[in-house]
Image 1 (cartoon, protein in one colour):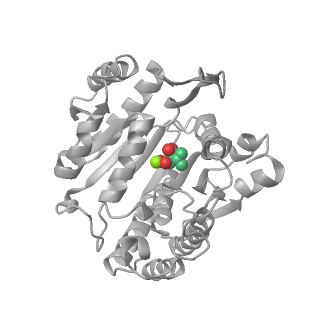
Image 2 (cartoon, helix red, strand yellow):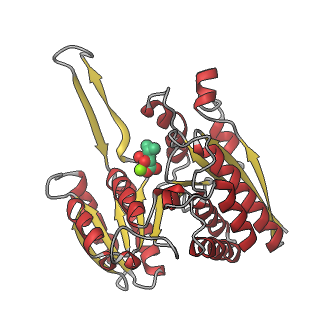
Length: 350
Ligand code: IPM
Ligand code: MG
């Protein structure tokens, strides 16, 4: 029997609540499937730890995590820590340190869920977000702090290698999907260096994938396409910041940020990949027991898929969809179910 070792990092806010539910569902699923088992190892790396010790994680954090088959991550961010400190203290060092360059963000309107769009049922997208460089490279600085002549630079760093590998990943993914359609999203009219390189490398990589239909849409224009003509999109590849923004729009259009999953993949498997709900720590509802655990369950399905347990992943997705069809909904979806009710319903459906 296969045994997977999963590092579980609930982090902050509702991350703690939804990861606990995710673990319950994974354990129920493993017990049903019988072909594999999961060993979930908890880590208390969080803003609470930062405020207590001055660090989100120990110095050898990556060395510790390296030994795991995957990482299940909740959320990071707290009202009493600046957001850029929490992000750079925990999540980004893992994404960058483990070269998780392909961030995969699927969106679909699950059964029973209402999209704010009339034609929301057409949404079936996967956004591939470059996850290690670009606008999130961390390059830049500030001088003359606090003076009238203060200057800050925020430099996007795009490398041919970084662009090429994410495009290749996106083409492979597009090729595996029924519509075999990949949309390149940039802003290469206004940003004439890095974004133009993105476009050029895309067209070079495209030559190796004649079966994939491609088009190129500027990032501002793609927002209107997402809203007005969802069926015109399938797989989308975009830079770190552009895809960050588009994936929130995609989540809202598919009903709620509370259902949207994501996978931070190191496709070559030199390092563990990390799986997390997109929603963040949501301190406004933390501790109330009403966070939507669906994003974490869907995330867990993506993790199982990555581990090679496709059948278990499909079984979990079917159970999730059965529960959404029954409209066992937390408040973000307009219902009055509590987090634990949704978990119980999914476990029953399994
Ligand atoms: C996401 C989030 C993060 C990001 C935040 C928490 C910094 O919005 O995963 O989309 O921008 O990467
Ligand atoms: Mg985001």
